Length: 328
Image (tube, rainbow, N blue to C red):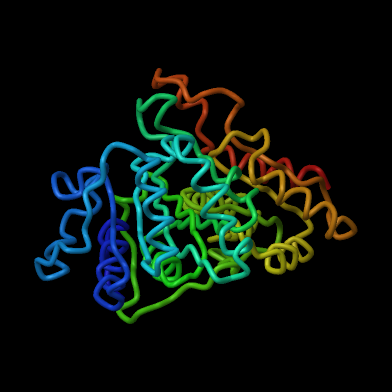
């Protein structure tokens, strides 16, 4: 194992895939200047031995970036494109929803759109409503798109490699706070399969179903709960489309209680899909109603105090778990 930041782990994965397969290229705004919007491509040129032929600077036009990637993918290339912020995605919804997601089906499998759309998202201090949304539920609702939400450096590295080799368009949603986090990463190559959740912490009393940045927050909540005698199982979904029904339901049937949490707004969030599935398929095993938490239904404010009220924190997850325990 080696210790790496999320930024370096995903950068290494991208460089390895670009060297392995000449059809892989990266396109991002300000790529050769500051290394992309979050500087998370700084060092890529060096990892590629100075070869920049597959590093394309993009204009400030999400429509141009996505539409060119769809065409390149249909022609046999494997583009990795960067949206800078997930809030930029509405500018290119036609290209994503009507072209990327549907082409393989409409062409009977002859036109594969193997592309990865990296979308930094989530609340970061005082970035305002235009740069902080978590939009994963939008894309998990679209047949033909695969939705990936990594939680740590090792997961980011393994899932990005799988995404690049995948023959479908992949929405790769990365919380902006992840890039500076550190963690253990395997020395050897590891491809993480889509649709297979990870048990981040075993437990017997309540299941915490989370993904992305919420995994570490749920682990922190579980440590707090353990001091109170409550053993929470933390499930990292990894991917939302497909998502691992089997592992989630097996865990909930064993614990009898479930908490679903995300940073996206609670109304219409992916937690509703999880909660409904648990209620429909594991109802007889539940000892208490499913508890679902997320952000309030407001645009994220610029005010630091109001912004803090929109975050789903470890304390919120712990409180939700206590409600689940009390509901028996």
